[in-house]
Image (cartoon, rainbow, N blue to C red; front, side, top):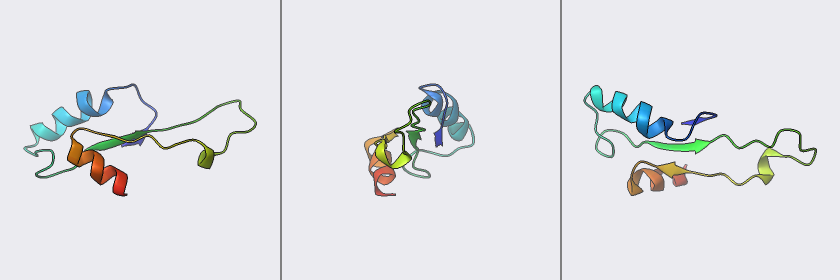
Length: 68
């Protein structure tokens, strides 16, 4: 997921919904996230100059997310 949303959305909102459908993280799906990184009002802002931040629900999910 890459989006502007509150911290915890992936693990508090998406993960339970995925698990309700019978899917298991790492076995059936890799769940990772990357918050949208913006710097509104900064005239020197360029998307390529802001570091990408990636997190995962597990270490395996994080490694998959980093590989993409």
